[in-house]
Figure 1: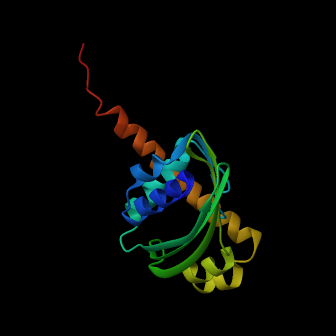
Figure 2: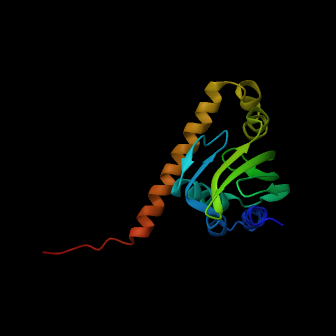
Figure 3: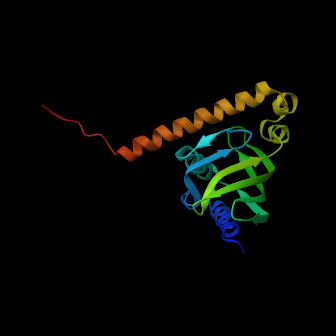
Amino acid sequence: MHPNEALIERFYRAFQARDAAGMGACYHPEVVFSDPVFPELRGRAAGAMWTMLCGRAKDLDLVFGDVHADDARGRAHWEARYTFSPTGRRVYNEIDAIFDFRDGLIARHVDRFDFWRWARQALGPTGWLLGWTPIMRDKVRSEARRGLDAFLQKQEGTAAGPQRATSR
């Protein structure tokens, strides 16, 4: 097995275990991630997205396969079943991923899936009627980014530790 195939497998095994730190360890510090919901996340934001999603994924069932890689590029297919927490609706999503590598780590990760199919499941009738439109895609992207930004702010606050009151 090529080392980059093993890297992809390590990434998805960590995902199956909801081990966001293990997933992040597979990423290059300057990684660029994109998918239909998060069109471009760089560096720390990409790892934070997985940390946020793994923390919320109470009933995630993930399988992966068709992993292939060489020195420069790789690909995999993965499938996820989970409850979309904002609506409580069950989702089955099929994703094709491509990867670029640098310094033995994932430098670019692109996930592709049918956004309208996802929206129909996750959002119900609204997704069925509007999931194919750029307006709905932009709304989902905006809400997802707002959630990630709030998560990042919370992480930064936690990393700073509790603030002590000072007296004069």
